[in-house]
Image (cartoon, rainbow, N blue to C red; front, top):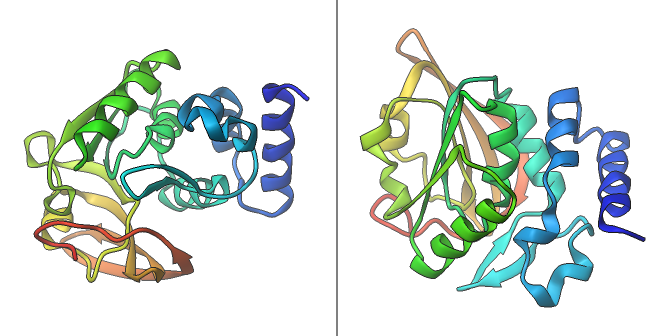
Length: 213
């Protein structure tokens, strides 16, 4: 079975499970070849709905979690998005399709080797509206702030204040909080008020940095 066939089958499964709910997210998943974002040794597993190791003790998230996060943020065309934890670049690639050519995704990664690999993967996938930076993602990325949405692909001990500060008003922040088994928290800023909604349990590698572990 070709990668395209496997991708279509995975997307169909995620729709049946209710992970993919909108046409926009479905289209993004169909357009991004996940096999480009996993190590050579794992390419045969690219369309299994599971996290995969990408080096430096990090993982590429399971497709269902990427779908859940994209749907929860309700990302729109032309938005400016911040991702904390670039990993291999796959999640940012999906989001790049949701914001379109006039939108932009900024992603920050603490490992130089992963950041460089993410840049290569994104280039190979012909994606030009993602900027990969190196630094402490727990403090956000203030030079491009504010952002319409911020999402974090690692688990924090608490919701970092710098990320809330770097959100537009209105804006949305999605972050796993806890250790290993954690809660996915949706933070909405509106009219200088903060509302937090618990979206359920999840598992992520820890957020490391000044505002992390």
